[in-house]
Length: 167
Image (tube, rainbow, N blue to C red; front, side):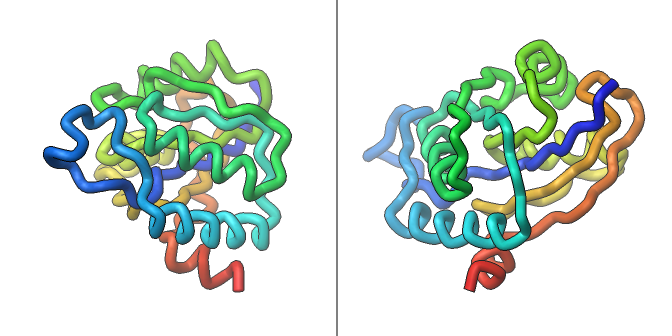
């Protein structure tokens, strides 16, 4: 089993739910969300984060966040959709789909709460979900995508800290 670095990323600030966006899957990021996440990605660059593959939920706001992440890191990798990152999937479903799809070992997963908090807790053996702010990133080192052993929480940063690192 090959060790794996997982960067778990909650989508940036999106348009509010409501009459303007009756289909929640199509809600986009706001201008503020885009600007703030671009800054946060600068913090990831400052931390020398390197990502080989980016997987995203099929929802618009997550896809937009994943694209900003790829561009901000100067990443040549394409953004791929992972259905299990859509709301309503369990951590084992995410990891099973990821282990069948991922080819590399430095991976970003872009999705939604509460699923990402549950996934991070599952990966590190925490008793409760880890609470992600919009645009927040968690770095977990695991033994391999199919490993049953808990991973190591290397760091978990809110977007405000990432933006500060970028300055």
